[in-house]
Image (cartoon, rainbow, N blue to C red):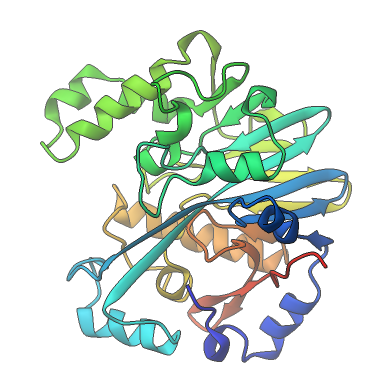
Length: 324
């Protein structure tokens, strides 16, 4: 997805945020290219933490009439045009995170999984290109149970992708998707999501740890309730020394639409009103605190700052350049 140079980078506050990132960014795209591997890797430090954004690909599809449920199609197209994007097409990237801290290697969300194919399901290749053995991952933390976040829990053979990992999941999310009553009431379109959650999360039953709001995933990574997108949707706050970062998960989908217009309702939100309130609250928080953020569906490298702008916000992406 192209960066919105006119809207995102026009204001002085946005430019200042983009040029004053409080971390050191280094990519290993050059090394990946030499290995003939995908280059969707972006490494940086947050205090003593080692962070790595790993792209899982992108979904491209024609813009649905009701992609935004409470805005006209013309308004949505106009917002995309203001962001210098094709108003007839949606491009939604997927980016997981690896964080190394306190001797632990933590993966935040697992992507679409190898079965997705096509332009999705690239996480395993990018983990390999980054030199990360899936057997070495100690904790897999899941923000919510939508397929593009839990698809990678199983490999091509239907086995655990991360056999040595503890699976940390939101307790509310676990209760919702594993409830037989909720499955019986689900629409035909939703039933496959329940079945996928039961299959993929269920494979880790003996290694699953449910957590609630404010619980430690591991020291320095705290789960924070951000409900609405799904019943138990969760974000993660990273802290190391005086450095902090918010992993926004799916708080906002396409940033040109839902960062700029936080009260718009994306079709994927299960409780759109609650999701919008959560979105405004979190975007207010990270912009007021000038906190580094990562968004699962932000354009790669999916890392930057949120800046308040009138009734909405703007995203200032970190500059992504290959290591020379």
